Image (cartoon, rainbow, N blue to C red):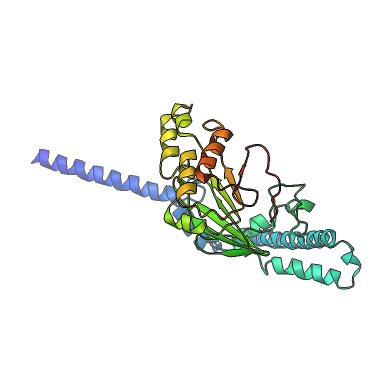
Length: 318
């Protein structure tokens, strides 16, 4: 019994010591002089002492001042843009600056391009310095000339095979031809009663092409290669197969076959074009075409011409 009473007394003593220890910890946390306090207890103490705790979402006066400054910078930027637009318009219009309504037009053009109020996400960008003023070449009123840029075109028009269109007083009729390209076409041009057929880059002559190449005053026909020269030439075998295919190019023999069997013989001129420098000779193409025409050439009909690679043909008049 003495042993049990002693053990119980020891347990009570440990419990009392634990309570005493926890009590001292509470006193330590509530001590105003203690500087190590958890954030939660610090907030409670501030409320207890009457101090106003500012939430995170509360608007900051300094941030509001910064936004007002950015709006002022944006207004200055817009004003500078307006002045630059007026200067560019003055340079483009030349003497128009002397007219009474010039300044009003410049202001109106600048106001059309500026926003009413900058977006909140763009306030930082609005305070950036303005972009450099574009040069005179960027002004749309000043179009380049062919001397400045040989590739410059005033406009680009699109057409489709089988749908005729007109350029000035010339009617143009595009038609489909067989070649390994994206929608290849040949052309028939007609103006003042003169019809000209233009067909190159095709592997063979299908019926639709034969129908287009009738009643012509001038026929420009491909005579690309000699078969023996192509087979023995320097091209890789894959390229030779492509040229010889039905979506390749017309040989001297294929052009001669058309002139013999399907040509109506009404053209005043026949021009052999797109002659290969590696796989053909001009005289071979001429001899093959003359044999196909078989005495139908004369001063008034079927005059045979060859288009060279490096020099244009002389002008042809009808």
